[in-house]
Image (cartoon, rainbow over the protein chains, first blue to last red):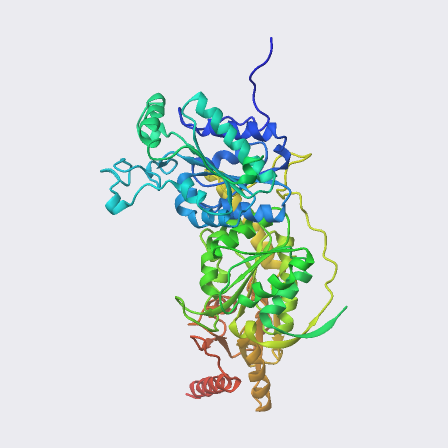
Length: 250
Length: 358
């Protein structure tokens, strides 16, 4: 019988430690498959952040550097400038890239730094136990917005990939979701394209992935997927938000 | 080939970095350190190196962190408020044991402060500075030639101990033009590079990170670092003794004031006052050993500092209450003259004599 599915070489044997229904594992697997398909596992250095995404350093089979909260893209810049022929990617949560590390996210794009960033947006701080994120939706309850996020005092949710898309050095920015098989395929395509943009030296590439956090949302895994569709998708525009002409010709 | 040139202190540091094989520099302009990044921007790329002006000091130190992970020689330079911003990255760099050189051209503070020379960052420099329990090796040059020599030394020490090394200077040293001999760099020893992260081609994957949620592992890590710091304290204490052998009174001072104190000592000797100087070269590890030969003979010690009295704490620990330790200090960017220091010493001696007679 033909083997149609197996473990990707891009992941180690270390079992995922994520909560049931968390989509981090799906996203990591997609990245790992792309690394394997592009044959760049041994050529790649990943940078992990702080938070649930920080576990990524154990799961990928490429070299990894652990960064301080929010600093992954500055660390990635240092690695890439030292080793311009290696592939460098950061794997970060929404809080990491769009709050505590915003200055690096803006300037890594402005410099057209030839690295790839994967942003996992689940609208909440996962590891610290469900606090408000820059991406927390209006009226959404978290442990630091217990009566719902009030934009007047707590600010508005930020569609961060759109911010990055407006910066000249960003060559490719995509916003995708892993709520359905079809969207998972789109996510993988976007990740593949983002890495190819880096390989071609065309500039900075970002893939933002809408993701679930059933534990901190207080929902079942299945309900979480529907919550994502009903509440996040209307706020966070999906699609390839930015693609330079050179990227389109890839 | 050796050549004698006239350069600003900050430029000397830049030249020393290039000649030490520094491949990457990440920085952010701040007076009075800016000539370091300016000099390197003009001169490092033509030597095959990279200079990047970061979005801020936090970005710069984390770029150093990333580049140091690849085993390349890296440096950043800043002044006091910028060094405060770097503390997070320095803590992470110490935890992952990354060799890097960090230059602090100390300006006066707190807050934004002013641009004049100060030693107000002594505590921050020698006690780690950021969160967690770690140490930086701290070198304190007092003149142009030492800016050159100690910067070169800093790169070797960083590689030898896999630890960030700070070169602590000040606005006076950084901005003064002096002749310096650009000595040929001795052949650098081979350093272990089997820890670097540069793509796992043909080997097991490596992770450079400082994250551990297991307390037992946390303690083992801290003990490992502690042993390294103790070894450094044992081997790397450095200082200059100046007319200290027969001294009845000792000045202790580093950097710019250490240099001024040499004139004070010479003037004192002309007047028959048996004054000597211990000039710490490593501020961490503090040169405790420098004091051992003098504890029985010396009647009093004066630390001369540009702060409220910071190094004096380490001096008091070093002499274990066997000698009275006094403080002569200026602050806010002001420097003492050699005469003012001598006046203070003579007053102290006169007071000692009165007390003995009473």
